[in-house]
Image (tube, rainbow, N blue to C red; front, side, top):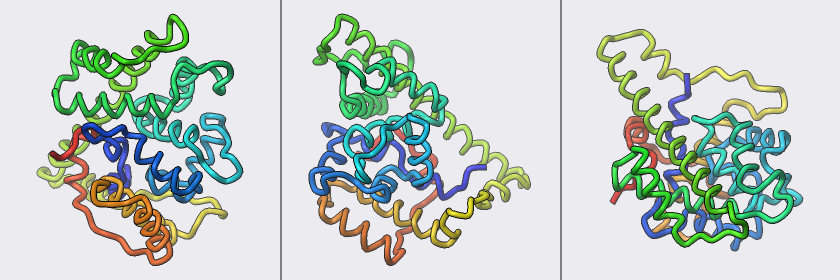
Length: 272
């Protein structure tokens, strides 16, 4: 079972806001820092450092420049994170290869940060229209890519096909999460023993070099707090987010959040 705490951590919904490009938040952080450390990438993606390092090791994410993660790295990480519940990691890598070729060799047809912007805008439109039919998805793809013009004759069809697939993956993930939440409620009404099992933290075997359990919990809570700051971007500055992250990482201070509210809220919709 998935740890309930994991549901508190944001996915792509933290980057969806009407009229705002999703990756702009990361661009502001990059402008302030010149590149993010692994712990800062964990803070804005809600991923474990070991997970990101494994993606780098497998070649799904390019090696960081020294120890700094730049635009190309973070955009790929965000895309993988948005799709991984519905698409195999190996297939996500192939999808990115379909768009820009292997390892970004040769001329790319779109920056992955811009592709992430398209996905955020598309999901924002999907949440507003409440139409996940094939016609609805195609209409959103048309609207989002209207101004795109690529360097090759097949650039636009490739972008459209990849974006449509990504939208469907995110919608499927949302439906999956809604289904799991409804099933938990039914099991609770039945007083089924599986409810108590699902509420208990998942047992994870840690390798010797991993952080102790208590330190790992503090790090996860710290990432949650920074992620909350990202969702409340309109009242936060880049400098404040970085300062808060550093303070919280050392102190372990956290804020509480309603688990069921996080689970039930459609992940491609935003509070108005």
